[in-house]
Structures are given as structure tokens and as C-alpha cells.
Image 1 (spheres, protein in one colour):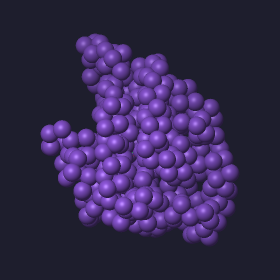
Image 2 (cartoon, protein in one colour):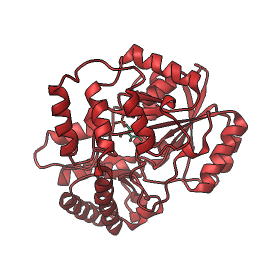
Image 3 (cartoon, helix red, strand yellow):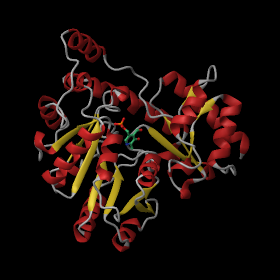
Length: 362
Ligand SMILES: Cc1ncc(COP(=O)(O)O)c(C=O)c1O
């Protein structure tokens, strides 16, 4: 069963796109087009016949380039499966779990986690990560698989070293699996991000990709990293079964992307955007250290509307699309998420209007 209430960032965005002059802060898609160097490279490759299937694990050349470019020092290209986006990578990993697995998520979390888990009829529960005792509660919770997003969507939170160490201790204690979604790893505004790959355990599965880091969301290029080779074999078979392989052209352009500095350019631009967002919404700084979203609690501003009511009103009054917090977890009904992966001038206009609306309501 897929998302019963049918509210998600994609359909909110689709609705907004149909309205002239709308401002879309509802989707995490970099506003930059893929870098020219990468696009030019794709023309050349297509002209010279890069139009066939590739290996189901992914091109060896690409896998090697990922290990070096993403700096997965403890891993080799044999530990990696290239997938059509990291979302599909997550689906594959979930498909390998025993049917009675107990999955645990930290709230607030990306809504696709629960949508995929429900679609596969897996059991899951959530733990509110805003609870100061959440690590203690993690120890007390019975689970087999933990999904962690770091930097987190929707609030940009980056786990500190103590929290990461504690999570790993609990994973080992419970003989559980950690799925670490690191798709926003490029967007680290305080140089505090550390990949879970540094723990070098076969109980850790890393998800990442090119969508956010190189503004390549439409190329569908992601990967799974894991040193458990039985699992790698299963994942290759699933990729073969459902997709055969990732589009060959996307894979070659992934190699080209890793040879650019486009990722640093995107990081600099969105870092500056994050600082502007925090000038308007300083309280979001409690969590925002990376990614490209701010998660704003309306109760901090004395607003009594729910995130859903506020998002509707904002769209009606100013044609600005944001996402209500309820889709990231039941404890976050008073929040909304805005994406700042947009043009800076548009962002500033939108922030000004959002704050004005909030001030007119309290
Ligand atoms: C937390 C998180 N993980 C994964 C994805 C999907 O990334 P991909 O384009 O690689 O499938 C998104 C997209 O918004 C996301 O927010």
C-alpha cells in the first residue's frame, strides 16, 4: 500500500508546477542543471556507441572511481553495486531482509522510507530523534535493522561522533544491520560529517549517489556499498531482475562527474543559501548543519496552524510550495520543510514572504 494520504513532496511540487509564477521550495532537486562538461561528455559517448546494456553490478571503472572520489577508504570496487538511484538501492536492500525483520527509523525521516517499508509489508517502528534520551531508548528498543539518514532529510541534522559511536555499539550489541543513507554527504556546512563507512563493518550498508552531489537527479545513478559479499551477490541479482543495469550512459557520465569540481561549486552555493535561511529562521540552526532543507516548527513562532494548514495557506496567498512536517513523522505536525536548493534571489523573496505570513498569524 503506497502512502495512504497521498501527500508527498513530489505531488505537492507537481501541483505547484501547474500554477504560473509559483515558487517551489518543496522538492530536493538542485536548481542547477548538470554541469556542461558532463552533458558534453554524454553527447560524445552516445555518438560513439555507448548505447548498450552494462554489467548488473555496474561498470568496474565507475565503481573504482566512486571508491576514490567518495573516499571510501576501507572499501574496494567489489563492495559496490550501482543502482538506478539510491532510492531503488534502498528498495533492493529492504528486499533482501527476512520477512519478519523489525525495522527501526529515526523520526523525522524521509517519507519514502515508510512508503517502501509498507509496500514490502515489513514491520517498522519509529524513535523520535528530538528526544534527548533517544540513544538510551535505542538501546531499549528491539530491532533488527536501523535506517539512518545523515545528513538528515528533512532537518539537515548531522550526527556527532559520540552519537555515531553509540549507534554502532547498539548495532553490534543487537547483531543488527545499519542502513546509512548518506545521499546528502556533499552538503556538510560545518565540516562535521563523517561517513559510517569509516566503521568498516559488514553490518553496515551505505547508500549514496550522484543525484544531489552532482545535480544529476534525472540520470538515476546511485549505489550501495557493503563489505558483506553474500549480500552484494544478492543485490546484484535483484538489480539484474528488476533493472538489468543502470543506463550505461549515466554510468559513464558518473565517471565524468567525478573528474569535475562541480560538487564543490554546489556545496558553496547551497552553504550560502543555508546561511540566508538561518538569518530568517535562526531557530532552525538547532538542527541544520547539512543537506538542503530547513525544518521549521511553527509553534516556535506562536503560530497555531498545523504544518498542513500553513502550507496550504502559504500556497494560496503566495504560491509558495513547502511540505508539511506530518509526512516526516507524527510528532512533527506543527512543522514544515522548505528546500533551499533553489536560485538565491527566488529564495530570498520566498523567505521574506513566508516570514511575513508567519508574523501576520501569531
Ligand atoms: C534521504 C533521501 N534519500 C534518498 C533520496 C533519493 O535519491 P536518488 O535520486 O539517488 O534515488 C532522496 C531524495 O530526495 C532523499 O531525500
